[in-house]
Image (cartoon, rainbow, N blue to C red; front, top):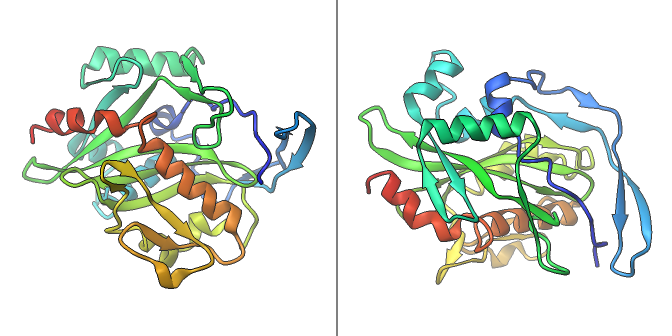
Length: 270
């Protein structure tokens, strides 16, 4: 059993990074990260992760939204094709109000976002706290219709904090695209979640929900059993594959975006 981790979310920074463009080097890395892990018996251990690899979150967002090939500045593309919407999990609300979105940005910059602790023994994407708000993006077609939504996702991998975006079709919520812009998993194994385009392409068209519940699977041992809700895991990286599975199911589950999907559709005027 994977050790119980006490990890506080990094306050869900994607939208701040999108504005600042902090990570411009797709191959840059920070020193090794040392993490304190508390196992289920309360014993403390030290886990030494690999190098943290970053990509530019803004470029990753545009790629996941299917806008990466448009020849214009990132700022212009985002203004034209992405409609930011603020989600409040505790209030069960969604809004495009610019003042509310700006206030959210300011709280992020000053590290004053509120977090909700999970119930005893429960984790959310491997974290023991979930931010109370997040910024999502409705993706507009050239004619103005909205066909998909990009959700920020973040959680604990096997060795590191994983951060990325997932785009879902706004009509039936199947996966359109996914990409990660931060990971520190084992190079040449779990690290493939950022670089292996063949593996990432498996997500396209897959369903997350079955009878309203997220049941997405990343299967490492029995690829022959793949169905509409499953993809083949990364060979030799079972723990990272499991982390990606949990991250998707938790963010798209009842403690995440699932209760707000109907309101998001209404916000898109469907």
